[in-house]
Length: 389
Image 1 (cartoon, rainbow, N blue to C red):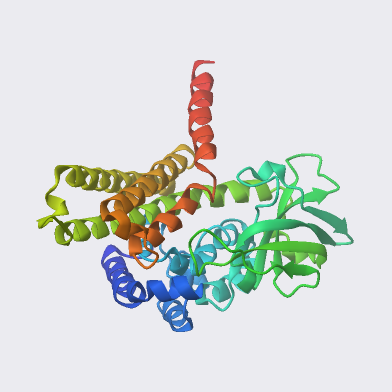
Image 2 (cartoon, rainbow, N blue to C red):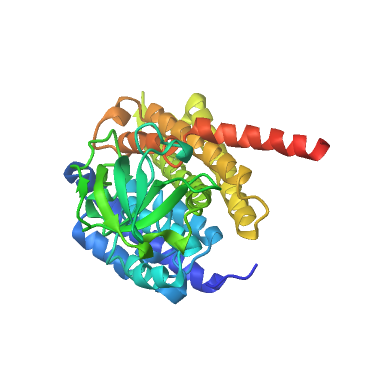
């Protein structure tokens, strides 16, 4: 399989990211958690390494990693505080990929180089009250006004909204078009009048990652803001970006589970009870075995789904299956890690306590586990009906 980034070059990139995660970020996880922020010097280092644009094509200033390589990188990024990945996740993922896949050449030229460098943080403004995992329920509207549009509505849980230089906004067109579902995507600069961003949300975990509510009140944009210059592209853009993002999240979850496993093995080998290392107890070994099995199965599934997506063989069932299994598996691995640590695992400054809270969100965003089950089950049944009809 040909890639823009040769395997030997990618191995160097992966080694540099792995070293950055383990030597620079890991020692500061408690600082990130306690300050609820990623330190500026770590952000600068991430930008210098090209992490704000690792999945943006090289012609637009990014590293140009494909999805197979993206998954390997995600496994490394998942090994530490998820706030690090969140900082540049929307640039490379659901926001940036809308532009990469559906933007005009003019839109790409205006935004992608600045997104890739980290100069601009892009936010994916899809979720809103009553329309989370299902974009069909959108209530935000874009009303035609001359040759431009007026956007009204509210979004919630929008990652990086507090730092966004660009909002990728999904809205229903008014008047509704004669064909299609009428969902369009707009590129709205963060300083456009009428945008109000709330204070960042206080969350259960993932301290340092910023989500917030965003209100659009009579926000006027020109015709150049309509992604692809096509009002019917929105829903397809959302589904494509989310499917790709689900495979990335699967890889991220595997990285989290690997960290839970490593922390468990290390603790089991050194902590003692009655003078015996707890890792010598068979029930502890059984928990570690379950973690190891989950990590290996999840890694294989995420890699397989990435290949299928890249070749076009499966861009619907495989992404959902990978996200469903890997995120559920990571939750179990983190839970077992706390159990192996005993009371120590419940203490705030112990890595597995933070990990336990961080991974819980993975089963919710970019489509809940329940939505993934509907996509998988429904898709298989529909395919069989089509085959036998």
